[in-house]
Image (tube, rainbow, N blue to C red; front, side, top):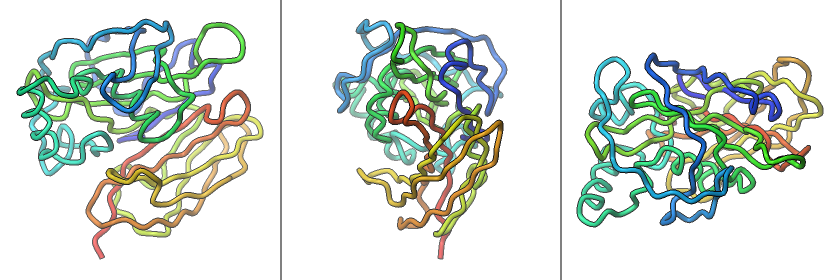
Length: 279
């Protein structure tokens, strides 16, 4: 979740998932092929199994829907920087390296960035392909998916929202949240200052669901807090959990709610971004 976050029941999403959340106006461009970064620590594939080269850098438009120069560490002045960069200084360092030798060009590919976020940062290894990508100016919604037991059609686990972090031809993509559908993560509010222990909650539709909640921060290979497993189910039913965590104040934290166990270990997930309140 971001200024909103969304999720999907696997079968429904594949038929057409409406990206909600921070909806921004603009023409949409949909694609269906992507691979994980060849120079990132993942070997994810796309739903078509076709390898593609990183696209040439494109210019991010400015204005009401465009990305501006990072201000106060936020992306486009309003979104939490969840991954792969934590602040404008990290963005600037990567841009210098990229301009010098083309290093980590996958940061310029929204699809590959979303897959690396899902597999490498969150650790959801079975979610290894992209079912659909919609780009709207400086925003991208990437439908990350896993292979179902029957048929070639992938099952969407989440719609990852990315925004260009900065302006210019080589402004990288940054994950800022997910778009919620049948699994929502609405508490705490996006961008809230939080302390441990933390109450997390939202709504879910499904049968015999078991929700795991993790708290993650950049630079930490493992969650800094975790609780499992919250029994849930029904039609748009509320769920909640209490999780304790330990992290330095002032940094953006990613809260992750996930459920699965029917067709895959993780079949749906939602994320939101918060900050740890100063003591």
